[in-house]
Amino acid sequence: MNDGRQMHYIDEELERDHAEYIFEKQELGTLHNPYDQEIREFTSIEYGDIETLRKSLEENYAGEIGTLAADPLRNAKNRGIVVIALASRAAIRGGVLPETAFSLSDTFIQRIELCRDVESVMRLFHAAEFQYAQMVREIRGGNAGKGAPPSANDGEKLSDHYLDRCKTYIFAHLHEKISVGEMARAIGLNANYLSDLFRRCAGITLTGYIQNEKIRLAKNLLIYSDYSYGEIAAYLGYSSQSHLGRQFKCRTGMTMRQYRLRYGRKFDLAGDGKY
Image (cartoon, rainbow, N blue to C red; front, side, top):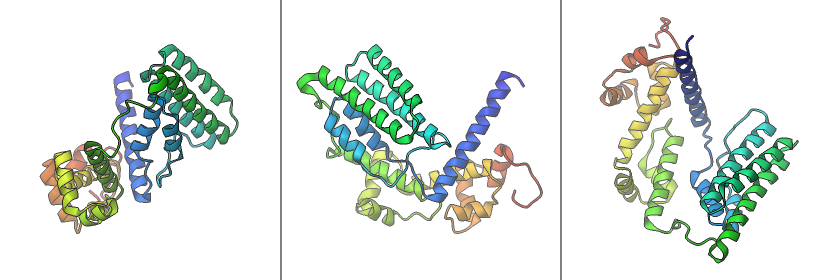
């Protein structure tokens, strides 16, 4: 197998694994912690704001940290490496010399590799974050914590916040019939206001976005699973297979059968009635 064909095979495997991983998370209702917490965490390092860093690390969410390895200790070490790498870049943006930041990153990561328990790893990479924040603070002097981006009280930031919450809600409920009213109540906004806000910010209606996301997931299931069309429709909260079929053809120009025959990679036709 030449290099080009080998890379194509690896790409298909990654796509399949990713699709299966997302499908499993949606079925179990588990999501990662929100991205806005990560923004606060590393922005606080960039501005040398130690108090905000401490508060961001104390925030609690119903989501979970990404799984980076099957072994808990290796998973913690991998997470620590990622956090330290991001913290070092935040410190550089805050004025720390790149070589200083990179050298400190190397030192902390080497020490993490010597840890023998998860708690030690977590203490170490959090210590790295605070050290980077302190370095920026010393460089900025009396300006530490100033010049940070606008808070969530500003209109544009607040709109982005609600937009992200909408998309997260939709992602978590793709296997259900999504009600705009229920989503608005979960987010804490009036349904009409939320619909208008989403259209203005995202450039598409809420129902249009929901349908697009359902069709996107249907494509993944057609490519990477052997679920029947009826099973896919039921999983995505459609009233019938024909209802999904009409929307699918409207958005892709193909029937679900045509799409699976053209792009399906994991399963071959087996005469089982699922194609």
